[in-house]
Image (cartoon, rainbow, N blue to C red):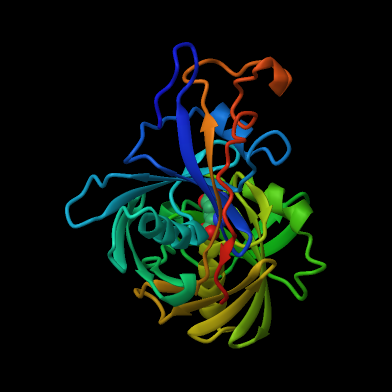
Length: 321
Ligand SMILES: N[C@@H](CCC[C@H](N)C(=O)O)C(=O)O
């Protein structure tokens, strides 16, 4: 199935999934050889010339004992990152759908530690996202000492934000109304702010009441997405630290709702939400060839994204929160 013909790249099977509209290309790198360069990931992520996704998720064999899989994450800009909460839920569903495991509690190794995924009914998955990191150097965030709220100068303006790592770095701003928040302007400036040396995901949090919040996230390496699971966890941690939220919060994102629970410092953050599997596909990869200039598919273009058309479309399978 995965055999290349001489002179052609290999065929790669993938699944398109999403968690609340935060969408993924998911690849089983246990059953097939897999290696992509950042420029190929960018091409595949392109919503016009490629498959289109916010993140690429890769399932690999674990490198640790007592762990089921290794979970690797690449943003649509090709950068490899440490964590993806919506992706973690889809990962759990994927490894079961593909019969890579039949466990209901799956332990997964990420770049920043082990997370646990619990598969529930109707595509719902609960993820133990681990203990949030608030120590500035570990986030990483430039500050003399740890605070719940920092002031940051951006473009001559002072903004207040909380800095939290959920394995990946987040800055969280509290706003009056997410609909009018300057996500497109402040998001990219804060993502690349020198006080976040590894860049950051920037959340705009609106407190509705102590158990309800609304959130938009400008993601590092992907731009604003329909939802960000680790962003929702970071936002609830920030809201709790500021005394604005209770321990269990319904977070409304553009693509739907997540339930986030945090019992306070030293406790892990729990995230519960839906998963959706959209279609399975196969694409021809050009191997290690440098990216080619665009040609028409009729001329036999081997660019990834132009030869993915052998999709075995299925009925979308979507779970409700
Ligand atoms: N969408 C994700 C986060 C993906 C990674 C992020 N863009 C980063 O660079 O850290 C989620 O659901 O958590």
